[in-house]
Length: 535
Image 1: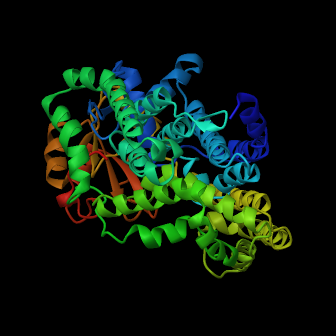
Image 2: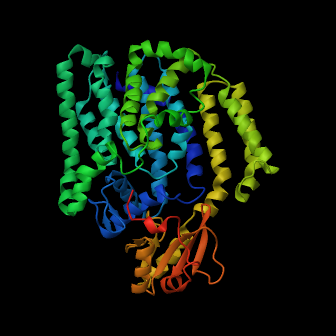
Image 3: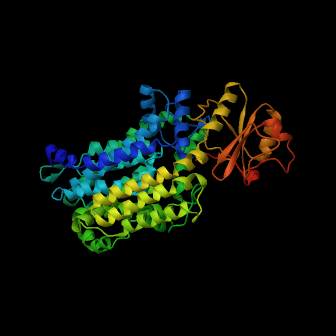
């Protein structure tokens, strides 16, 4: 495929990209970073920046083996130009998601150059996946990984003239960036398409040995690129960090996971929710046999089903682990929609039902939090109008744009609740003032860096269970202890308290908290068994 031909194909992706930017940019700035994922990611980048630890990620002052440094580096690049704030990281997420949308369309174009509608359809498919949309409004590591995975597949599917000429250097670069984005899991996302290449890639069918040799060299080259960071980081880190980075973070998640362990079938019902409402369409199911037989579509089938199978066998599971593979579904969705441009009625019906529910909630049922109650009717009317529109216009672009607007509407309606229940900046500012005064800080429970970035904290916060907290308070009577409680404190009152989810965050002077009668002393659930463990 010539560069000019691919450039013309990219122009067809402008509308889904511009639609994405027009909706996502206002949405991501409606409220502050949401705990715990976004605040933790920002805090890790902040600690690296504040301490000058650009090779070893830090978590509460200690080396952090759970994450690799590509996303913090991208955040640092923006901070070096515009200063430290949460504006650039959130803008970065929207731009990375836009890159993934465009890459998905370009991958479809390379696989099916004779069917240009599928390229724009794949981009629209990504725009219309609600979980991808919401996830892109968080500051997390999966989007850089998704961009790296798609970059590797684009290199693998490179065409010259009428033939396939894989870009092995591009694949090596993608492997290296994927490893830097999320660690060894990048090899799984890219490994499935590579290991099944004989089923879908013409160059692999024509000369399997040569393809396998070049692919192996490219993967090794990517690992070598990753080693340029890994080896210095291992030397700078302590023995515990080295063991965790080399052993625990991979082996510990595969079998008997220490984190997010779930049964093998867990992803099946989860995917039905994440891919709704697209999978529940009569037109989609009728197209599956034809899509399965199409040689050009074997890549997304192998990619999606293979990764799903492997992740199902791995003990540790999270819904967002599959996010880098959503473009495979979007590509199949676009191919099915090309065969039957007039889509089904399920998205329209879903929005009408949600809209009617929100309008009813305005009158008292179902009961909603007070912050959402005020905006429920307006959001419900907007969803009703969108649902009727999707019933009338049933093309893939119309449905994708409508679902994107619906997600943005629900997100805007939930914004008052997010500001009231999830904005931890007030507590973070109290802790920041205390830290500047040299007062020690403690947290009763599992501390997840909720306050580090918002407070620009540069000293660790002691993570304590109940017994540790009593000892810590005796040693640091002038310190401040943060405690979660099921109800607001009255008398004596803490130094500061604010709502947090369905509970209350309270900041107590250590000596005051220690002096409370045992039955009045606020404790989080199961505080006696909590231990510090970063995620």
